[in-house]
Length: 252
Image (cartoon, rainbow, N blue to C red; front, side, top):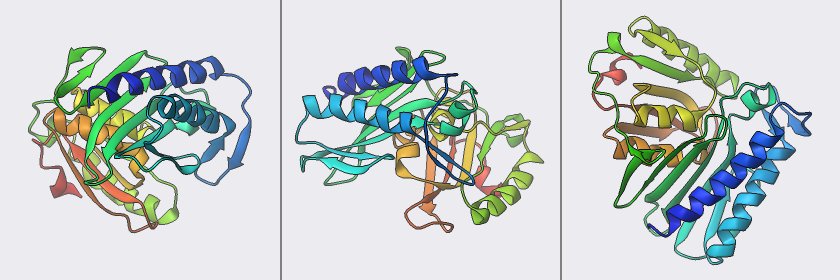
């Protein structure tokens, strides 16, 4: 899988440069939804990443948030979130990233993950036989074991049903932790757990491209990720990711 990692890094950084250059500018909105925003730049970022990957691996498949499935029928499927945290980006809040993962099509096992925050120039990487790193330095999840020591992020999703469930979880968690945060990027939440900045992340309704790279990072860093089928929308998932040491499930 080491050959996949350089391609993912190059694509993530190229997309990150495109995104950073457009930060704070007037943006073309493709769709303005009640709880979400779709930008023309999302599509451009995904097209850039897809083109770079398929140039090197023309038989590989691409699953992206923007535009669905493309590519060939080879053994590897790439999973792309071209801007994770689009609403933050639209409102000029500098907390968003590019997320790229690869998984074996036969087993659905994730074998490589890259998350790039272009505003902080922070790059998280992991792959089979390649330990998790942040800007080339080894990382691991926090060693905290008590909920009252922890900082936990709770995501609020894109439907009334998921929002209602999120409010209840937030209340239960917030009474028992040091602090809660609502940051607006699932991929960065996972990356932050993997390097010990956060201790857990919970959200009612996410998609595979939101968390594919982060899932491998967290598990490789010693953490734990629980996924269940989402109840609010077909094809989505409930996620509880943590450092693997705190009893987060007791508060859900």
